Image 1: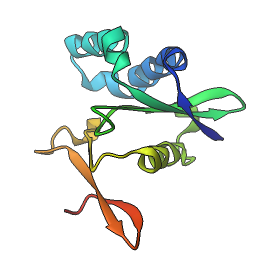
Image 2 (image 1 turned 90 degrees about the horizontal axis):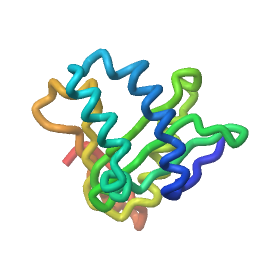
Image 3 (image 1 turned 135 degrees about the vertical axis):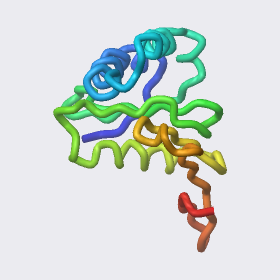
Length: 137
Protein backbone atom coordinates (compact mmCIF):
# COMPACT_ATOMS: atom_id res chain seq x y z
CA UNK A 1 0.00 0.00 0.00
CA UNK A 2 1.17 3.53 -0.84
CA UNK A 3 -0.08 6.88 0.42
CA UNK A 4 -0.03 9.68 -2.17
CA UNK A 5 -1.05 13.31 -2.19
CA UNK A 6 -4.09 13.76 -4.46
CA UNK A 7 -4.23 16.59 -6.95
CA UNK A 8 -7.62 18.04 -7.86
CA UNK A 9 -8.17 15.62 -10.77
CA UNK A 10 -7.39 12.60 -8.59
CA UNK A 11 -9.58 13.99 -5.82
CA UNK A 12 -12.51 14.19 -8.24
CA UNK A 13 -11.87 10.58 -9.25
CA UNK A 14 -11.94 9.61 -5.56
CA UNK A 15 -15.50 10.87 -5.11
CA UNK A 16 -17.00 7.58 -6.28
CA UNK A 17 -15.18 5.82 -3.42
CA UNK A 18 -16.29 8.52 -0.97
CA UNK A 19 -19.93 8.19 -2.03
CA UNK A 20 -19.83 4.37 -2.06
CA UNK A 21 -18.42 4.13 1.48
CA UNK A 22 -20.71 6.90 2.73
CA UNK A 23 -23.77 5.05 1.39
CA UNK A 24 -22.61 1.73 2.79
CA UNK A 25 -21.67 2.84 6.30
CA UNK A 26 -22.95 6.33 7.10
CA UNK A 27 -26.05 7.18 5.08
CA UNK A 28 -28.40 5.18 7.31
CA UNK A 29 -27.69 7.67 10.11
CA UNK A 30 -28.58 10.70 7.97
CA UNK A 31 -31.98 12.10 7.00
CA UNK A 32 -32.59 12.37 3.26
CA UNK A 33 -31.76 16.08 3.37
CA UNK A 34 -28.40 15.23 4.98
CA UNK A 35 -27.58 12.71 2.25
CA UNK A 36 -28.43 15.30 -0.41
CA UNK A 37 -26.32 17.92 1.35
CA UNK A 38 -23.34 15.55 1.48
CA UNK A 39 -23.74 14.69 -2.23
CA UNK A 40 -23.91 18.38 -3.10
CA UNK A 41 -20.85 19.22 -0.99
CA UNK A 42 -18.61 16.57 -2.52
CA UNK A 43 -19.65 17.68 -6.01
CA UNK A 44 -19.13 21.39 -5.38
CA UNK A 45 -16.06 22.87 -7.09
CA UNK A 46 -15.89 25.49 -4.34
CA UNK A 47 -15.83 22.81 -1.63
CA UNK A 48 -13.30 20.63 -3.46
CA UNK A 49 -11.00 23.63 -3.92
CA UNK A 50 -10.77 23.93 -0.13
CA UNK A 51 -9.50 20.37 0.33
CA UNK A 52 -6.01 18.95 0.64
CA UNK A 53 -6.26 15.18 0.20
CA UNK A 54 -4.25 11.99 0.46
CA UNK A 55 -5.17 8.64 -1.00
CA UNK A 56 -4.22 5.09 -0.07
CA UNK A 57 -3.48 2.91 -3.09
CA UNK A 58 -3.03 -0.79 -3.49
CA UNK A 59 -1.75 -1.80 -6.93
CA UNK A 60 -2.77 1.66 -8.23
CA UNK A 61 -6.36 1.17 -7.00
CA UNK A 62 -7.63 3.85 -4.64
CA UNK A 63 -8.79 2.16 -1.43
CA UNK A 64 -8.95 5.07 1.01
CA UNK A 65 -8.97 8.85 1.25
CA UNK A 66 -8.51 11.55 3.85
CA UNK A 67 -9.06 15.21 3.03
CA UNK A 68 -8.41 18.26 5.16
CA UNK A 69 -9.78 21.80 4.96
CA UNK A 70 -9.24 25.08 6.82
CA UNK A 71 -5.47 24.96 6.24
CA UNK A 72 -5.22 21.45 7.63
CA UNK A 73 -7.18 22.16 10.80
CA UNK A 74 -10.30 20.10 10.02
CA UNK A 75 -10.80 16.56 8.73
CA UNK A 76 -13.39 16.94 5.97
CA UNK A 77 -13.44 13.44 4.44
CA UNK A 78 -12.09 10.16 5.78
CA UNK A 79 -13.18 6.98 4.02
CA UNK A 80 -11.72 3.51 3.47
CA UNK A 81 -13.29 0.95 1.16
CA UNK A 82 -15.09 -1.66 3.30
CA UNK A 83 -13.20 -4.51 1.64
CA UNK A 84 -10.01 -3.05 3.12
CA UNK A 85 -11.14 -2.28 6.68
CA UNK A 86 -9.06 -3.52 9.63
CA UNK A 87 -5.78 -3.36 7.68
CA UNK A 88 -4.34 -0.15 9.09
CA UNK A 89 -5.20 1.94 6.03
CA UNK A 90 -7.04 4.59 8.01
CA UNK A 91 -4.12 4.83 10.44
CA UNK A 92 -1.68 5.22 7.53
CA UNK A 93 -3.80 8.00 6.02
CA UNK A 94 -4.06 9.72 9.41
CA UNK A 95 -0.28 9.46 9.87
CA UNK A 96 0.27 11.05 6.45
CA UNK A 97 -1.84 14.01 7.56
CA UNK A 98 0.02 14.32 10.86
CA UNK A 99 3.41 14.16 9.15
CA UNK A 100 2.54 16.79 6.53
CA UNK A 101 0.35 19.10 8.56
CA UNK A 102 1.53 22.43 9.94
CA UNK A 103 -1.61 23.27 11.92
CA UNK A 104 -1.41 23.41 15.70
CA UNK A 105 -4.85 21.85 16.18
CA UNK A 106 -6.90 19.44 14.08
CA UNK A 107 -10.65 19.03 14.57
CA UNK A 108 -12.05 15.62 13.82
CA UNK A 109 -15.81 15.11 14.06
CA UNK A 110 -16.59 11.58 12.98
CA UNK A 111 -20.07 10.16 12.75
CA UNK A 112 -19.87 8.07 15.89
CA UNK A 113 -19.04 11.20 17.90
CA UNK A 114 -22.12 13.23 16.96
CA UNK A 115 -23.53 12.62 20.43
CA UNK A 116 -20.41 14.11 22.06
CA UNK A 117 -20.71 17.76 23.14
CA UNK A 118 -17.54 18.70 21.24
CA UNK A 119 -15.64 17.23 18.30
CA UNK A 120 -12.38 15.42 18.98
CA UNK A 121 -9.45 17.83 18.75
CA UNK A 122 -5.81 16.92 18.34
CA UNK A 123 -3.13 19.35 19.43
CA UNK A 124 0.49 19.36 18.31
CA UNK A 125 2.97 18.90 21.16
CA UNK A 126 6.66 19.59 20.86
CA UNK A 127 8.74 17.01 22.68
CA UNK A 128 12.47 16.48 22.24
CA UNK A 129 12.42 18.30 18.92
CA UNK A 130 9.74 16.00 17.53
CA UNK A 131 6.08 16.71 16.94
CA UNK A 132 3.56 14.47 18.63
CA UNK A 133 -0.19 14.73 18.55
CA UNK A 134 -2.45 14.29 21.51
CA UNK A 135 -6.12 14.60 22.38
CA UNK A 136 -5.06 15.54 25.92
CA UNK A 137 -4.80 19.28 26.37
